[in-house]
Length: 423
Image (tube, rainbow, N blue to C red):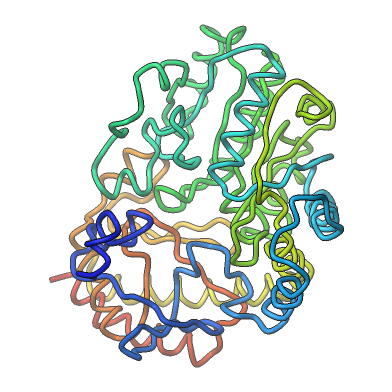
């Protein structure tokens, strides 16, 4: 870490990795396999971070590794179209209501591009977002962006001019009245409303029944686009992401969607997509410009395509089982120790809030939790060989690679960690 700090700001390449929220020194990992991480000192951990979501199948899945190795042997970047990027796009379209998708390299790039496209398509400037929803470090979307910003106690960030967020309207999450009011006042100027399909960047805060449907309908009524950010939930909450749990059942679809994490199989890959008439505004067909040298990278698309093809219903059942076991055991241990808490879930995703509230429904509720108790809990679990997110504002991710032995190790570590949180 001392060496890292000399050449990397804060010693890390993404802020939450720095352990500032929980204290102590970050673990530098040397390898990973299945549901286990091994650090540079040779200490092994059962992993409940999963690279912050992508590792649905577990680390270094043999078929994903083989696909990436074979792709790399054929060439690591072409700068031309390739068959694999078409196949990956077809796989995404098959699982979602999107008609076309454009591949990019990161979730931030996907949401940035979707916002630009929405503004270009509608000819409007205003963007509506929700406090606590994180859509990447795009200037205009860093207002009340949850997760990393919440972890470090900053509402926005220096370096983002006021003009960049003046066209962003921030609302409390799960508040239909606020949505109706902002569209009543500004509806003819709103280009789009963007939301995490099920927020995971303030911890898991599920949309209340009918909330996403309300957003889709309100946008449609006012000529704005509904942008559903499924960078985290896409192909993770279920085979069809969060949309498979609400929109598909209720009969509505977003105008634009963003994807990342699972669809890259652990490599830098993401996408945005939606209605064909909206996507037709993109260059080279339309006037909205978007480009990327490594977009559709052959190694990343090979890994992502293999991951999605392997992500069967059986896989989601296994991931869901692992989440069931860990969530239930965590509740049991914390309850026994007298620690106020609530576990919240969306599909296979869940998180634990150290709060005496019965439910966390928005960013204010997430911010009211006891982060000191979480830090004590985190370090007790780490000492017992279980790697949790080093922030109270994050999702716990299980994988299809979590064996009964892995789950037993987690469950065994929970009582002492709960006692630490209580103390």
